[in-house]
Length: 271
Image (cartoon, rainbow, N blue to C red; front, top):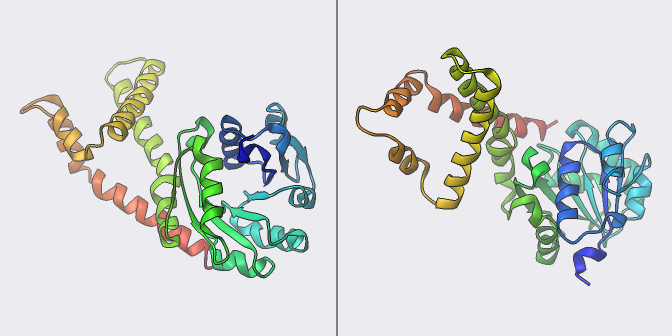
């Protein structure tokens, strides 16, 4: 049997990130019977139950029955949750935090000495197994712990181990960046509506345009500027549109948006 299938996986928190990661685990080798999710409210638990996953309102129950525990709660809830379950955490368990801005040092301070901690930042497309996930190992985490997490998450999308200093940048680039892409897609569709296209069709084409452009960018291995140049013909429609975007400062605005989101992630880690 694949080692991943034998791992008992727990989630504290039942939001979109937990659900997306859980779906990715199930797409791999983890069995529904080996996953348990806790949340104070039943609001989000039903969708986990539909996948055959056990649910509870007890965080302690999840920790006591898991080899790997994903702590998927809001950053401000991390201290209360970890203090609550701390006495039940063993040195053999892997604690994976997906809370934006919460550093490994903060996590290790809240957990028992020598706890194995990993900091993970996923993004919303994990829901369709097309996520971008970066993780960093804590002081007591070994290469084999990272390899296990990588193996568990490989069906969630792109997964890479990085230095912790890159995690907040990833939050700005990809965690928040998903919303920036949605805003751009919305604007594309609204532009088409302004020019006379029905709204439903415009939004459908905008989403397909974003999907196709992203897939071509990923699969071709080309720099975005090269692909952009390939679309432009001298005196054509695209270069006229790009000129308008540059006049509006779109490049600088996007760079500033990533910078602002990254800084906010860093600020969250200081609270």
